[in-house]
Length: 295
Image (cartoon, rainbow, N blue to C red; front, side):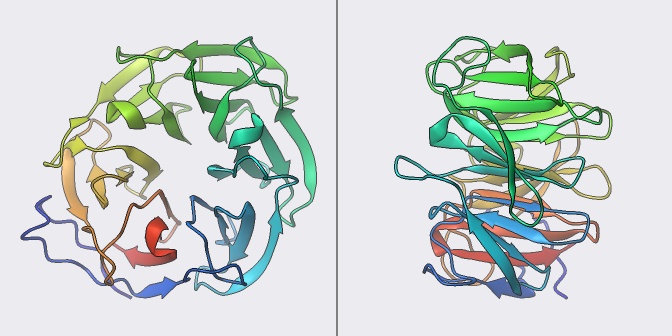
């Protein structure tokens, strides 16, 4: 298995690690993708990927196709977020239908949260992602005229919200990816502001870091997040076409990837996921494939 080397964030001089596994190509058949958008890995090491065809495809960690299902309707838009709930259910951010879909691991639609377009509590604009805390509460991000994080009870009842459209700390400009850590701290990829923000479960801001650019420690449209086994955070940058690794306080530990179509290169990657063996699965979105590495 290839070892993922994070090197200085200078794509002109970077030595690129070739992935040990690549699967997928453009298409609509089993194991093919149309711009895969989000990825999640469950406790059984199964990989769930949603693409622009509104399909959730499920694979083994070796890229072998298992099954798939589609969201109920997708005429006006496709999902852009997916995660695994604390009970093993699959949570899908059904972006353009202003809701979250909750599926069993077998693809049975169990229930929905939201569905009404609006700015009032309990209503949504364009939902981008959803995660749960250890108590089962849901945290749902959205963008539009009002970029909020909304919190719901395990039963799906609205509890609170925070944020708002803007550039100040605690505000968002298209919050794209959510990640809950073991301390019940909510990490937000604030994509349009090129930064990461961290909150407690009440919406109090704990820390914020990141600035615009392509140098070490800088970000350009961070779009996917996950932790490694050491507690470091990996950030998928769409506009820089790279993966950058940080300490929890925002110190850059290096980068992987550069723009392109060859192995070890990525084109507009949307998301990533890390399994318990520290294998990194990168959604190479505009190349319609997945690249797997380990570090």
